[in-house]
Length: 191
Image 1: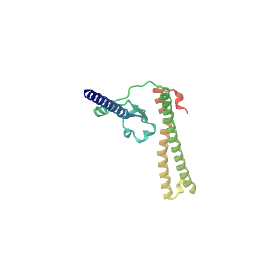
Image 2: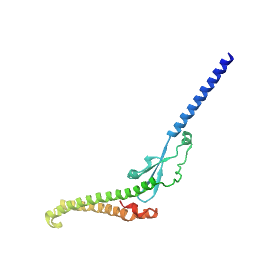
Image 3: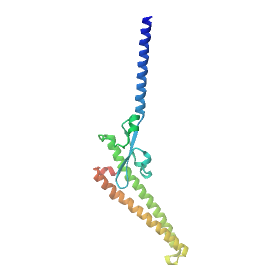
């Protein structure tokens, strides 16, 4: 009978140890599942922003946001964390190099698309204005309603011309200057 009690006791210990190991493994898996990301983006002024919430990223910068996996943390650490931590600097790898180059090229492409769109809209307004002016041969001979339409179109053209000038400035001055200050090779800005 004593042998039977010892065997039952040892068997119970083995079961308890197995359950404890299984629970530890489950907790470890749960901790690994809690992953946090940091979102990094650069605004139009060249300021780099970092947030742990994608909702903090303004809409106009969401296409260029860089998502980085923060080191896994435990649930307890998440509850206790009160300050947003910046990620530790990581050694630059080839993939980071390529991603960085793609980021700079994407900024140039985005501004070139904005420029092309603004130029297209400007040209359409200019054509519409010229059609109205050509009806009468001279601006002074136009009807009052047509004169008002021409003034309205020219106001829109002036606004779009500012967009064109801003886009050209970003492409030719601001982004290359930011790249130079960041130590980016000039070739990165070319496609």
